[in-house]
Length: 90
Image 1 (cartoon, rainbow, N blue to C red):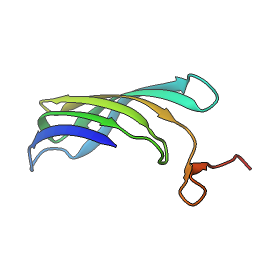
Image 2 (image 1 turned 60 degrees about the horizontal axis):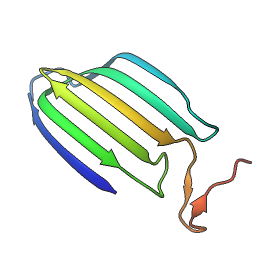
Image 3 (image 1 turned 135 degrees about the horizontal axis):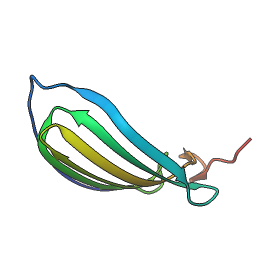
């Protein structure tokens, strides 16, 4: 996992509200999502890349004055930690 982020939040601000989102499939197991959120972050950014875990993928987010835009490309499957492989659809 690679994570890089910085956030300055307003403790009295509105915590969270999903204002808009869109998503879709790229392949059978890969999906994308873009969201616009109302948060309590004044300024922030996040880059997160994961492998070998549930819904692994890339997330990039930017926050400015309580608005947050987030983009993700992720795997729709769950990781089997015992078998060290993607869980099979049953």
